[in-house]
Image (cartoon, rainbow, N blue to C red; front, side):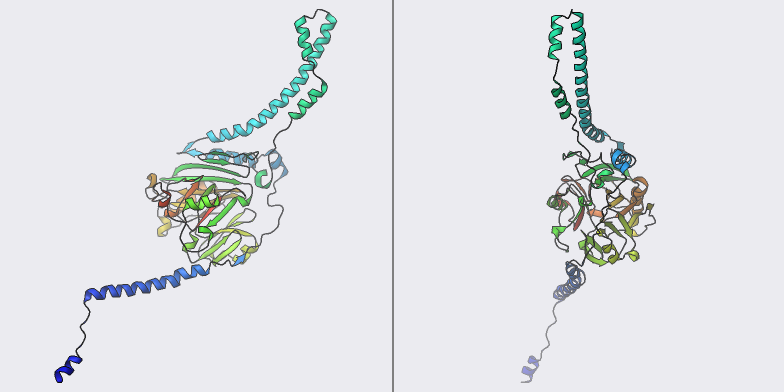
Amino acid sequence: MAASDNGGNKPRKPLPLAALIPMDAALIAASLLSFAYFHHVNPLFKDKAPLLQATIPQRDDIYAVSSTTAQTGTDKTTSADTTAATVKTESGKTDKTDQTEVTTKSGSSKSSAATTKTTANNTVSSEDAQQGTESEAQQGGDTPQSETKKTTASTTPTTTRKTTTTTTTTALQYDLSGWGAKWPELFSIDNTIEKTDHSYRSHDIYIDLSTCEYADSNCYIADIYVRKLENFKTAFEHDEFVNGPQENMYDMAARTNAILAINGDFTGGHENGVVIRDYVLYRDQPRNDVGVLFYDGTYEIYGRNECDTAALLASGACDSMTFGPALVKNGNTITGQTSSMLGEKHPRSGFGYYEPGHYCFVAADGRGMGGSAGVTCDEFAALFGDVLGCYQAYNLDGGKTSQLWFDGACFNQPDGFNGNPHSLRGLTDIFYIGEVE
């Protein structure tokens, strides 16, 4: 019996170490995943519902310009044309081929109209002169037969001359609506669209793309003019503000009919920041400088402690940029960014503002792509402020996310891109230029 009792209380044999290690690892992994979900993922889904709607003030003067500028196109028009011609470079060399072509096309219609007018006037003058010759010939009495026939054939009724003159004086006029009054010659005079591999011109949009080498990096600059703010647009991945499956730039651009696009802030990958898109507030947790595009086309940058979201919405905030930091503020280039990521050379994307209706998208390659080293944040700021002359400029998400897209293809060389659209990093949001449909 004693032997039997001892056998019943025999202690269990401990599990081997090889079995304990995987079990402990599984428990630790489960704990970390639970923490990550409730602390990082779940709050993003709670932010899905829009919080507040911005007030859009009704002002009739947001596109107003002086009558002198609208009629003659002096000052601002000249400046715009000069900017477009100067920025257009390939590998650091000035290339005015497209500018000349556009000027020729727009100028040819005016030249044709002027030529037609001159022809009509000359027709009337020659007929009057021929009638005078006929009268003199009759008085002389020695007019040759061939000359008499020629004079008779050139006699044209007065009504015919009037009809000809009326049909040849019609000429196309520049559309001065919206911001078109500031740069009438940049936009198409009718509804035609002119495209090259680095430019786009329509009734409402003018885009000129160029490349330059700056700070040992290839930089890509899109100079943008729009007739109205509605041509400046934004989009979320799959049209949803969530941290779900990210969307490829090619798919986002095709889905939204974007002509030009640049990556945004990676808003879906963060828990904080002030996110306003298309006048709707999606998140209100300031974490860095905030760039805001307003209903009248103006753009302002606010520090983290300066950002009053309620006041921004009341003032007609249309879109916000929340990655940062600020690169140029009120005409002053901001330097001194020395943190590890900002002070190192990396691929970068940014947005620049000149005046309402005139903006730029810029991407800088890096990490060896195309021989580019990348740029520091200070170098990027100097590019916007000292080289491009922007009044405001803001840093967007960079690294592999830095992508500038134009007319169906990537214009820059993003990190890791091998020509296959699916080799690009997925995005959560973009800023883009498109026609109003």
